Image (cartoon, rainbow, N blue to C red; front, side, top):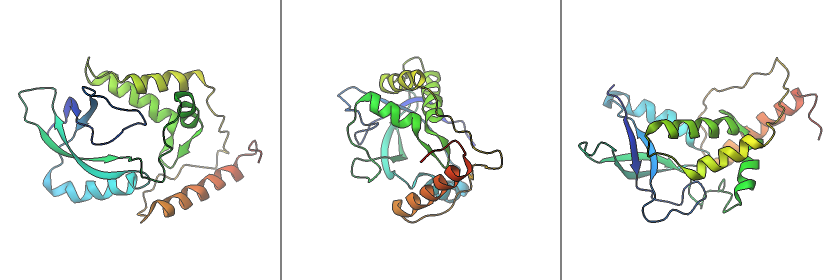
Length: 187
């Protein structure tokens, strides 16, 4: 597989990360070339992983290496009309929500901190102040104590679901399992 295109930005087709984008703002990311024989398999995996909150969009991708041609990339974007979209919130509210949230793929807190690190390492120009601000706020909060019994393991098995409602029911049931396994969880 060829290396991914790095240190590049995409033209944003939507209001991303609940912040308003202004002329000249860039959304940084990495574009991966998927070999044709693996496209269906990779897309199926991503469709399962990203179903709860994201829609498929195509957007221009402009490699930071200006000698490379622009690409048309498939991206998964959370749009404001999605039931999972919380709407415009104060940064401290977003940070508190991230700090307290966990899903089938793990802690949202850890995802945010890894995202900030990845963005900082893409390029000297790839800093995202919104993400860094949220990461600073989350670091200032006490991490949730998730003393889950050692017999509980996060099930990262991907399952095909057909709607956000079905995914929400799965996550709700998994959350109830965690609560029952956690003797410190008071309702």
